[in-house]
Length: 305
Image (tube, rainbow, N blue to C red; front, side, top):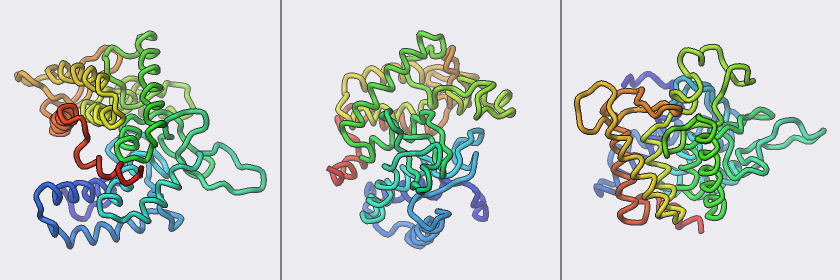
């Protein structure tokens, strides 16, 4: 809440997306116009190459314990979404094209390859990519937004969903998932992995928090993505699981805890109760199932077909 604090990579893109949705809902087309103009200008300077892909430093988005370096999937899906909502279609098209390039692990001889977020032989997008470095671990929030916003094609979206459900079955069989909802991130980072950080042992162990915890607000986005892809029965099944989860309480004496996050291996609530984002995305996913569409995102995808 500090106007002088500009250290977060996702707050401005989220502000722009939320403002446009608020304007559409209320009809206040000039709501916070001065702030919007400043925010749009600010975002034009967030690419180190002067391009369209937005870069970030580790732990600078909502995942304050997760290492996401360079061009992160989640932040760029939000950027793409607000560009489409503001009818900045040329910029949005360019961003989508850049995201659709393959991520690379090494230099291709003497030729320079522009890095992107698409992964060869997998239906999902990389967690992050920068030059010859990247992480191919799965980010549920970023990929759900890729489906919702139309960055992922309809066929890619369906393949991705099938892949997610199959990977979750494997996690269950291995004892790594006790809930019928996908973790926010997998495979988990374990001690000894190249991307393991010593701090994770205390703050981000496997199956916890940002390293594979089950986050209800992200599951809400996933359910909405299922609706967007036409997987209505699966969306209903996941919503039933989310409803059961939302009744779990950590400390508060309430009927619905709307807890922040759950441990993947045992399904127990580990975060704070009464989280607004958990409640908000629960309601949004319910509305998506009821309407069999995804409010605010439908028109974005319609423009991509």
